[in-house]
Image 1 (tube, rainbow, N blue to C red):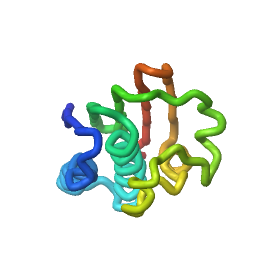
Image 2 (spheres, rainbow, N blue to C red):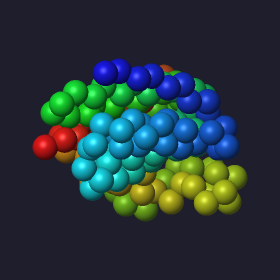
Image 3 (cartoon, rainbow, N blue to C red):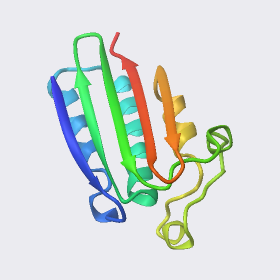
Image 4 (cartoon, rainbow, N blue to C red):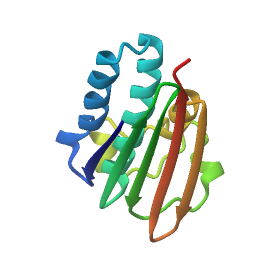
Length: 137
């Protein structure tokens, strides 16, 4: 089962749309609530990163009986130092984004904490791709 969502950079009023939709789907599939929570936290953090940092992005969600795989691709500034970006509290969010309550530097660490597998690829000036896998059993 595959689902695709488009994310508009800077549109904070729509941030969380994909994660809410996926949460509903997983509930209908009777996925364990603890697993749903992990998936939704990771997806929400990724979605907000696209909104806060990129021009636009897409989310592809692939669900089967054993796992949920989420791929988030954005067109944005990219991440120059992924190891640094993975440190809790490190953020490149603008002052305006921080004033809205986002950009605390916990997005990528929270994604890693709430997924079983995480791959990050990024090219400065082009964009970033996150691939997350969470096992359902």
